[in-house]
Image 1 (cartoon, rainbow, N blue to C red):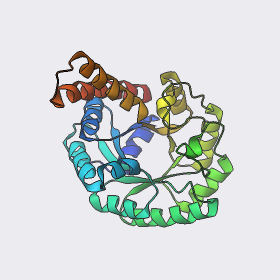
Image 2 (tube, helix red, strand yellow; image 1 turned 30 degrees about the horizontal axis):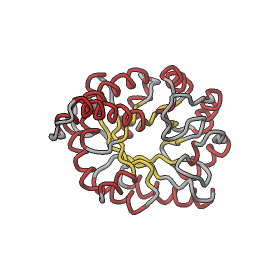
Image 3 (cartoon, helix red, strand yellow; image 1 turned 180 degrees about the vertical axis):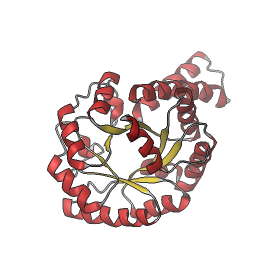
Image 4 (cartoon, helix red, strand yellow; image 1 turned 135 degrees about the vertical axis):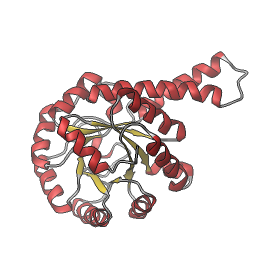
Length: 276
């Protein structure tokens, strides 16, 4: 199946009142697992590459081209997305490489600077047919706008979308990045108010910390893109650790990466069914 532009993928999901799962790719095994899980569930999916992952690989092209190849070979609609990019140069590189969407994260900047930087990136991307996600937030650690206790204001969200012309907005409604327990408490009423105010698809970051039942409630309230990373990494690592503990003689990485990849694929399939 040809690579699907993110905007086209979203139009299909919006027509169903469902959400698309967006899963982070750390290495090629992640990309293969996510695509396999999407095929098993019969659902579209977004493969995400974060700026941190680009830094880990030393460049976008190696992991980006591998992920694009996996996406093109999939039997379900798959889009490839740049996640949490703080560098406009990296955004431009992603666009040139062929990624269909970007998440430009200028949340560390003061509000007016965030608006100006995001507006410029959005104009550049829209001229090239690339879909743009952004977020509102305050200066802080990795949690940023998604730290517990921080919430996105609906009026500010409405103004931000109008001033930047972004296609989707990541909002803070109670989840937090890198949670290892599924104990986040979402504000579903706020999700509904933000959906009405923003007028663009809403994105939930930090979804690894949200229970399945609450993910389904968030979709019903208006979330349309759900990002997951830590949950898949935990599955992957648990299987690798168990495999090596059980077979300390193993030296071929394929012998422990393959079962980890299969476990992640099953987790992706299960999550996509929750979001449908």
